[in-house]
Amino acid sequence: MTPTPVRQHLPHAGRPPRADRGARARDWAEIQERMLVPLYEAVYERLEVGGGTRLLGLGCGSGLALLMAASRGAAVTGVDPSSPERLALARERLLPREGVTGPRAEARIVAGSPRDTVVAEGPAYTLVTAFEPIGCVAGDSEGLGSLLAQAAPLADRGAPVVLVGWGPPERCATSAVLRVATKLADPLRGAASWRAACRDDLEEVAQRAGLRPDGSGRVACPFGYADADSAVRGLLSTGLFDAAVEATDQDQVDKEVAEALHPHLRRDGTVWMPNVFRYLIARTP
Image (cartoon, rainbow, N blue to C red; front, side, top):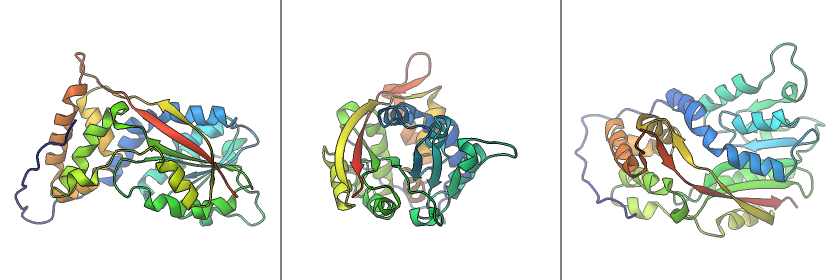
């Protein structure tokens, strides 16, 4: 599907309203985050995540992937430098209440960089995950390389590091909807800012961070929503549309995302978009 024609937006009187980050975080936790559950399960099953696992989750968001690992017996630490609102929800989900024992009693949520998770004389991590998919917007892997370079020395030698990317656009129905974000954020460069995922994206990021690729897989992660409103809220919660809201306004973004969802609206009012994500397992030096 080709991008829609560029529209000229009239200037606003004053600065457009910012996205409500608190509401976005709640929508992420309640609507969108579960879409990647098949991916988390496939990775954890393949790597036999369990009682002996010490997991560091980069960009852990509101913590669903960490919670799933902890339910398998893993000791989990999550770090996210970009979203204090999501981290607050992760703390509610994961941090132990009085009297709680077991893996959740060891859970830690850290706002900052991977280095901020270091505990004096603490054991090294046996698994590092970066579950936020790359390959959707030009340059979306730039920050990931820095996080990986900081995290790798904190893990055991040869420990697996998991990276995730979008699959090819012909197998990701959501990719056409996501193009709306780049088109609205920068009308003159919107089509160029969006990019299709390339086969070796993940390998290139891993190698730049000094990691050794060691296997990969693909997982179907359909995005399913109860209705179009839930779909719009879920997709906007990813953060990929924040720049579009800043450049135009919330109503314009909501309208164009809803229009882009029409081909995926089913007779019963639900929205269904098949997607495939690819994961790479790399190893620390």
